[in-house]
Length: 269
Image (spheres, rainbow, N blue to C red):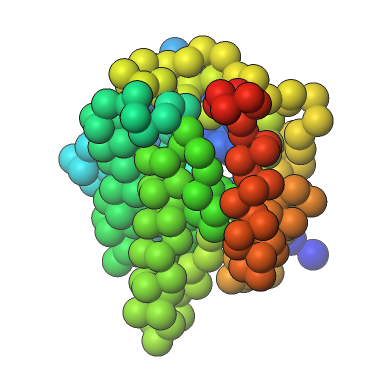
């Protein structure tokens, strides 16, 4: 029996590292035709070198640029003939308290995490409708529970999930499936690349990545959820517990969240 993804055209934004790269690697191994993008030319080149004989289309793209997103989708459709699945994975985090952060930091996070999804989805939409395909947003626990020190990141994920829920309902009659997945704490470069209070990269993370789910395992869970056309997917025990507590015991969730992120009144994670 052929794999569900064999010969399907799958677009993965932010596919040069972390969960995005794990998705690209897994999809290629399953026989999919993959299009991916990233902002770093060298990382794009290395990815192509790893998969020289694969059906792989790449482009240097900044998803916060509407023109970049439009060109990426147009060239993907030109190369492969259409798009079956769009996985909006590209994203950036932040780590700064509101009283210290420049508002430009929040603006930048929103441009990438929210508007990047809007742009890519809009320019892929006609093809996805034609093929009755799937649109996926890689969200976060921060899309269910606002996290201190990550106000802009939380806002972007809340916005993304609300937007996807809205278009999910809009597209029901078109046979298009829309879903969002929340990996929880997963080994990924997103924390190392998190923006600090003035918008530059932290370059380090206080999180213990040895205790987190691997990007490869996360990618397999995401693709299984896509194949089964799940509405949402929340991964890791910590993620599921957080979503449950936020829904049923929000005041208690406030206390636990504060305790997790602060030590002696100082943000530590």
